[in-house]
Image (cartoon, rainbow, N blue to C red):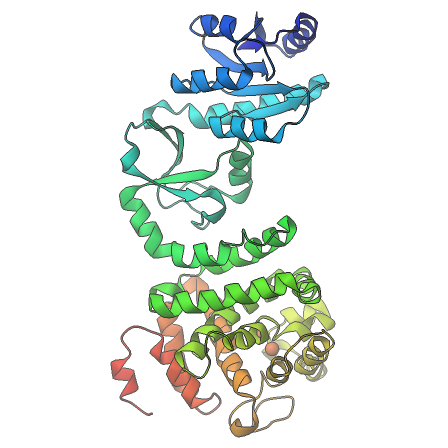
Length: 452
Ligand SMILES: [Fe+2]
Ligand SMILES: [Fe+2]
């Protein structure tokens, strides 16, 4: 495999060249960009390694020229110091990697392995298409398609060159996406027709939930993105009007933003996630459903719905104080003693949340009541409908829907069919909020005429 090595410092060039040869590469040297340009057509280059600071034609200029010529050869820059602006510019222009002087041979080897994966991606020749208007771009951080690719995904190499990086049915998991991102890639592209379907299927949820770029702390952002991704896997948005969905997503987004800004809340959510990712993710789903019901019921406005969404996110917070195996056990399989312990989680959650400064009282009340039933058959107090906090009444319904849905997930149930289960739950749940939940699904007329 041929490597073109460009550096105006002949001593350094010699050392790198020797390193590369020991790794099995055949090296051609050039003293500067101009000399290198003359050698471009000589061979099929596996990779170009170039100094960034050179006389006459700088490394950046060289890169620009080869990309303008439509050449996809990977380029690794050697930099004497880290210059953010140049690095960013170089990534934008399509450099694959950087290596800072002085470096060890192993480091260079690592970069070359990265180049190999890049080469594998870009050298699928049959997929080059030369029509820019044919594609729509999606920011790589907002890209959500679930586990298997349903539409082919492309990268843009130049305004005239797109290359398919994932075929329908292939896996494009987060590790692969991260590897691609490392190469400075910012956008994925879909063919126009697919993009429209992608929008309908995903974007309302994905965009809004995953648009956490305004959260400055990178670690927090990653955390939120990771818990939100699973929600996106659910396809319940087909059954809910896009307007309601957009509003509830907006509500959750605000809630998560609020949490990210309050250290104690963030730590609380983080600790719940650490205790059990599935409880945290399901709570997020409960939060989404609860916000939708709250807004549909017209009893909450955009500002107060944050309390519903917050209470929903932490409704099962008390579970993390119990033995982990208990939280995973189905209720029917619990012994009397285990059940008794399990039923303390609303109080535990309420106490924990109350100890966090700034928790609205309505939120702790709602958590305390989230397992109470309208007919008095719930716990911990067995109180009747009028005494149950209104937010808790929404939580009970949303919790039921989220849990039922998780149970039906493998059976291809639609969200609509899950909501319809509420028709049999009018004794234990609040009738007004059941009505609001039923209104969420599109063709509500026949249902509304009955029983209310
Ligand atoms: Fe609970
Ligand atoms: Fe729950």
